[in-house]
Amino acid sequence: MYEQIAANRRNTLLLTVSMTLLLLALGYLLGVLLLDSPWAGLVIGLILAGIIAAVSYYNGSSILLNAVNAHEIQKADDPQLFNAVEELSIAAGLPMPKIYLIDDPAPNAFATGRNPKHSAVAITKGLREKLTRDELQGVMAHELGHIENRDILYMTMLAVMVGTIVILADISRRSLWYGSSRGRSSRGGSRGSSQGILIVIAVVLAVVAPLLAAIIQMAASRQREYLADATSAKLTRYPEGLASALEKIANDSEELQTPNRALQALFTVNPLDKHVPTSSLFDSHPPLEERIKRLRSIVGAPS
Image 1: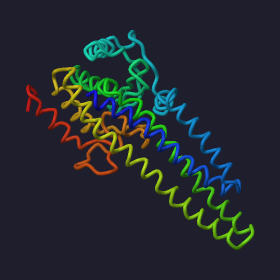
Image 2: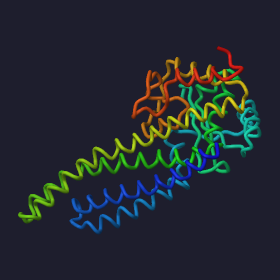
Image 3: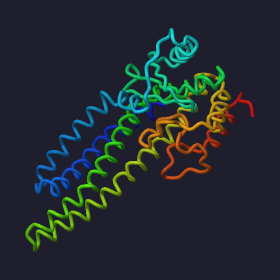
Image 4: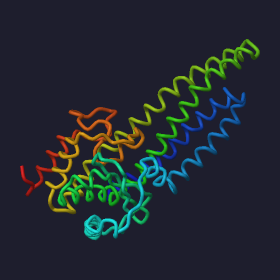
């Protein structure tokens, strides 16, 4: 457990450095293509990296919660839910997280925040209405597991940065026509050759960067799901609750109304692909069948 927490902190730092370098590269290319000044591009990239890192750390949760149209609820709105989360928080030795409701009929949930003192759990209306108390506790304990294991900062920053990379890559692709037209109208010779090389690099980076970011995000998410499942079993002492909830979520016919590929790794069950038979580089979650099998293999769980 403590090794995973330490690894999450190292990964958060590594992620920030990697994304900064990627943003600098994108800024450099955009500076050459649009401003005819690579140094201006580097400065812009550095400024963007600083802004994005700060926004991800301090406001990443708000960005993600707004992206799914979640609104905060109070204990008076749902005493039973709050009591369940309070009991689990005490068992985990964690502060009570804020609770948000997503007005969506598809059952699902996710946790976000920069640390346990600044954390939140968001659940859909469908999850609240369709699960039994034991199943609901299992899912809430799973999300608290992400908070306890310090997954939330890493995954929150990763979600925001992946979304940013996708946007910047799209801007890079759109700027290629403008940049290439500038290159055709500028002086020929070595300058034109250099311009052409940079355009090729920009094309490759614009295509590859989102894919690499997605692969990093998915790989990080898969291992964290197994750990959060185990934490749920530890907190509830009833792994069948989460196992049954996962089955119910997987078999539910409703689809999340606000799916977002940058957010899929955060949810209890991937809302974009619930029935993945085997893991691949682009899967944000392990196969549900394997997660359920592991939960039911825990001593005391019904088979």
